[in-house]
Image (cartoon, rainbow, N blue to C red):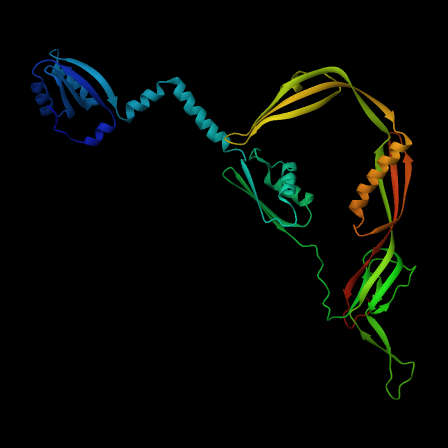
Length: 407
């Protein structure tokens, strides 16, 4: 016998219903009485002459037992609905712990930067910008608690020609937008009169004037702004009735190159002693763990060496779902001794320092005519005075404003 008797509010079975097996005789009479008393029953299945399986809502089960009394054997087979599912889930400690751990991982993951996207750069490479961001504390795997204003200030200081930088978070993505400025001076319009003036100090060596009048002869010492090739050219008047010595002038757009000897006085320091590290044979291995902002290094926790060298090999690094880094560490004990550098070593180091400073301070197209190094020994350091003389083009154009010829 299969059927549904007096079924109402079918949706309530989704909350909590039970499937039971009823064993006994005259079961149809029991079902009829339940229907008369408003007990909703569904899915009635006769298994045998004395067994019937039915489904009813959980809150009707107690009343069903009172109607059945002791005439029938009743067995609960299954429970259905979201209420028993929730109760069953939270009755298992391992399930609760798993859910809490999953929620914790999702929350913890949201506090870190998993990806950095860089937009708008032109003259810099993406690698250069990423290195600058890393120095400022913003990198893939870092905490989102990093101060973005400090990051911006660092980029302005680290990278030249940055007009604007914006940093914002979009979930776990950090979007960095850069707008580069321009350091190229606005050229003087060729249709306008102009001088060629000195952009730095030096001694004029050679002048090639294609248009205009030479104003600074070879050997002349000039300062920034001094006129090298004048755009004001005197003209002898040939008008009838004027004196032969009477002069007029015309304005031209000066052009040409002016080469000058430019002196540089640079200074740097170097160590007077070199330090020698000699291994003692004692060492310790360890592991470095980094989970988000949590960092732990077993080797650093347990070594007791006063002087040591540190080496690390990265074994594993992941960003998602949570930033995690694992590295193998070796800390080796060393004895440190110092020895005064020889004259050759001092000279070699001084030349290296000089090359670095020259690359930073002197234009790439400048020709170095003379270079000298002078050492100034002090207690633990040696000062290095670097004297340079270069040959370089020092002219730049400056517009002439009519009525103001003092330029």
